[in-house]
Image (cartoon, rainbow, N blue to C red; front, side):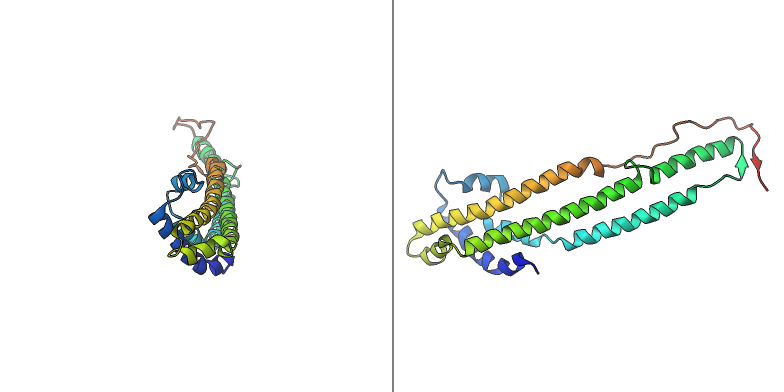
Length: 221
């Protein structure tokens, strides 16, 4: 468990009150919570639930699993190397496609192993993003749970709904601002990695092998 797990219970209870007050009384027209609500399309309590549901551990496991595949691709490429026990047109055609397949498996960043390594690195980056986002929201929750606005929301709902409503808007804005910042970082992360995660089509031999079939083929004994 991390700090967000510890704060999720009392945070959810406070934000449930905040959501109810926002739904019932709204907020001043010029309050900063409105652009955040429009941008995220969710109330603070629901936003908290979405971030709490994010877990970094599965992403770390995914990165490890992908790196295991890289070793298997390395082994497959190694099996394609070596001298050919035959000569002629068939041998040339085979060698051309063998070399193209070897490069496709493991040649440079534009190879299958390059894509796998990029995918593993992307999983690591998302893992870090999740951990950072959870920590940032935990800090915000800790601040709002101990704030005067939280006291106003809890104690003033019945006695002073106007003050409680404004306090709810302030708490909601702080929570949504943190979530919006995390969302922006996530979108930037996806934009950064998207070119390295696209499908890589197979590239055939750049030097076509002879197409004649009447050329003698020699096979070594």
